[in-house]
Amino acid sequence: IFNIFVQAGLGMDNLKLKTLQDARSLFYEPNITYSLGLEFEYISSFNNNKWSFFISPTFQSYNSSYTLKNVITSWDLKAKYSSLELPIGAKHYIFLNKKNKLFIKVATNIDIPLESGITSYSAVFQSPSDFNSSPRTLDTNLNFSFLLGFGYDFNNIFRAEINYNTPKDVIEKYYKMKSDFDNISLKFSYNIL
Image (cartoon, rainbow, N blue to C red; front, side):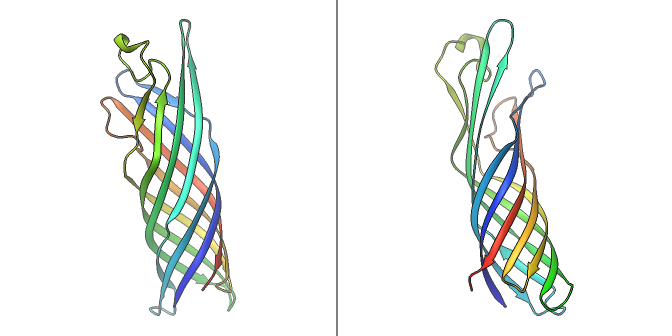
């Protein structure tokens, strides 16, 4: 059995930057984000159709800002992170009756950034000699995380699910910098095949 689902979702995304040099962490406000995507699923006949394999290309976008203030100055940081997520994984179905079933899913999530970056409008990511220089942008990179999910399926037509993406480092490998970006999302799907 092969299915194609259209998906739309709401997520709560969290971004944290860490400077390893002085152990400073910058927490952006959690942000509500939107996502759109497709899910291609193959349900195996093995074990009475209880297992499936899927790939789910999804577009998501995150925007947030952070201001760090001290006695002398303040630093403004803006984060823009748009990406194409590509979870590839498996589902296990738990049948309640002929039309209703629950599922558990696990996937490896490949995250491909699209026009993304974290921009500093002062000296947070710069040396003291660069204090008055122009804004600096930390580029994002291809990254991987794990996705865990739980959901409900009605008659193989409509689905609702909750997914959690484990933290991933979204910025390129900068000297003494690290990031953690994770999210939890609620998705609704409709079978178009």
